[in-house]
Image (cartoon, rainbow, N blue to C red; front, side, top):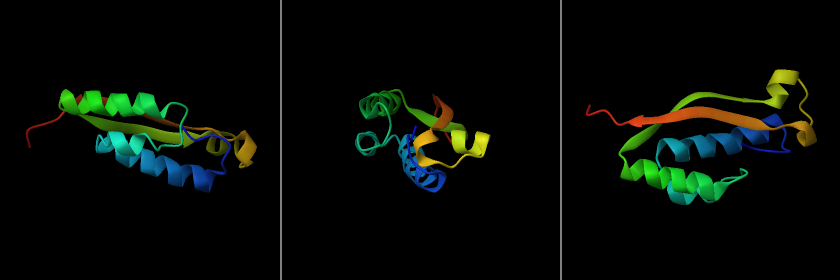
Length: 88
């Protein structure tokens, strides 16, 4: 999700994106520092219409996997899926 940032900065930015995904906050996702904020915005709007919630599976990065925290070499990723909101 985040590119060309050290791990601490990437994690902070990704936590904002994850919170926006979990809250279907389409407006916040327009400001996300990702490749396609408009794509995430549209996904959140679709999820809201379909009564879905985002389920985070994992968040990691090249810095974690390789142990190289050079900002220019790091790309993070968020893995998750949408499911129907439960009634509880």
